[in-house]
Image (cartoon, rainbow, N blue to C red; front, side, top):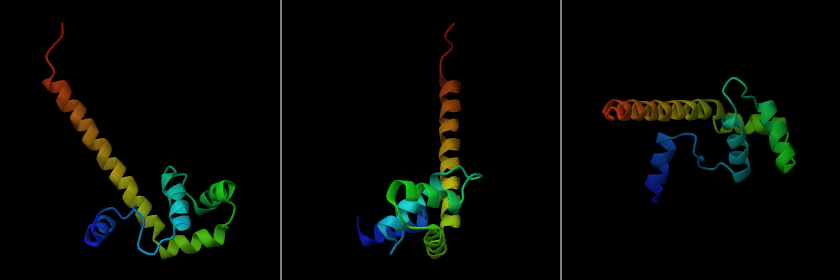
Length: 103
């Protein structure tokens, strides 16, 4: 993928790894955005990350969250998933409408 393609993907899908975001910061973000929206918290993400990888602590995740805009990126991920669910539902409805009666 070209540099322009990577930058375009970052703009269209802000939940992908951002320029300058370290692999550890992105891994922690992955934990954060994978949580259910109503259960999502930096404290919980920090605890899970610590269990899997050792440090960093909550203050480091707060810094990464501010620097790399985790809240808005996680919301964009939620919107992306919602759109995909709606598309799949529409496909299933259209397939059911087109399906011949089997009686």
